[in-house]
Length: 180
Ligand code: 3AM
Image (tube, rainbow, N blue to C red; front, side, top):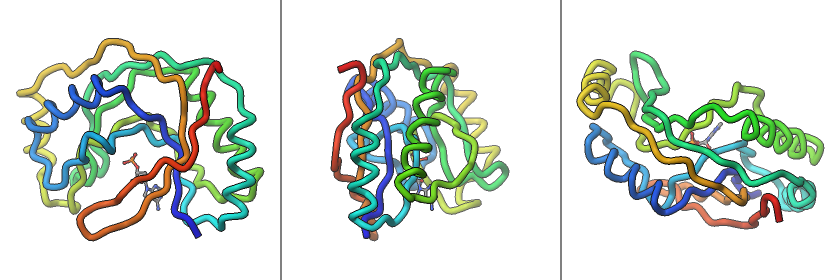
């Protein structure tokens, strides 16, 4: 079994910009900038043969490169924050590609949860309640508007996630070019 997910890698400039933002936030477990990504579909623990079939389906998807931008900060977990992230500006092309990826994964036999897609880059995680919602809101206010210039993403990738005590380790198993 391989614990896997599909995500968009981010340009180094954007990861560097978000690394600066991380320093301004109370983040008990910041995501190392090298690990920053936009998750499109969490695949869970998948048998290797199934993952190979999904890989073939992902490789067959054709889509244009995406133009994206960071626009704002957000929290998952409401009053008991567990995830602090940078939000992406709405992109119908991204939503469409994400839907096709989920569809391809399901056709290959992977059970992908049907939760709503909220495009984001996780900046840090915390145990629920470890950092107060109010404290985060205050930090957001002090930081002010967070936005990046538009950037192009010309591939999506299949990642393996190995859970370790000091945080997950990600490996890129396959890359799928967009517009190639
Ligand atoms: O990109 P983010 O940080 O939102 O939280 C995990 C991370 O999402 C998520 O998959 C991404 C890559 O690890 N993830 C981990 N376990 C999950 C699960 N059981 C999960 N998403 C949904 N269900």
